Image 1: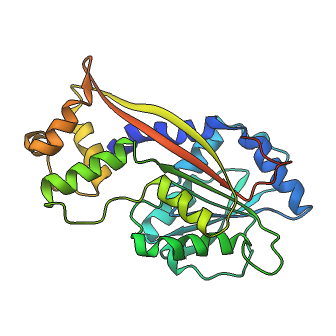
Image 2: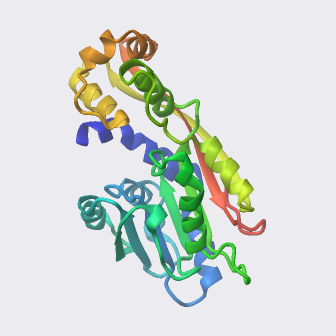
Length: 273
């Protein structure tokens, strides 16, 4: 995982620097008044996004109360890891060891629900129920729609994460298996559900020296959730190898990313993107 995040940590830094999160959180605090914000981090992983916000977005100086930061993930190990990295203004709250599509909580309980690079493995036939759980948790879709704010960061179909996994399925699985969900599908589904969204696209490149083969190998394994394949095997495969050759330029590994930042139910007088 550390080798993966040695390259992938830039994903979260770009998200943290893309908008004024300090002002965004201050707006949310104003909307709820004197109480603490309630936030749910969907598929929280090891807490890289809140850590990036603390390091790169100046949120420690935000004029807000401590944020009650709940953690949802199918892995209790991940929840434990994320809990350990939370620092002010975030304060660890409830834990939900489950998938998003299994979430049951009070309608509109959370003021903020976000999912950063978290929804790739949701099967297509479960995408709508999963997103329904997410938007209901922030209060969308009831008789009195006093919705909270939602945020999803997710790679588009142009991104390395999506393209490499598609090549992997073709090269090693005979095309059998579900591709990762892309941001275009999420946006389409949210539109069908009647959820208003605002979009911001960011593009960047994950880089490593060409000599850092062991680190790149583990990064690529994590991209696939398959640690059985060596970099040598990936390069020898005619499909994944052809693709990876295009990612080697000027003595560097370069993995181009295209990520969509999706903001849900952000009113016109409160957006900061």
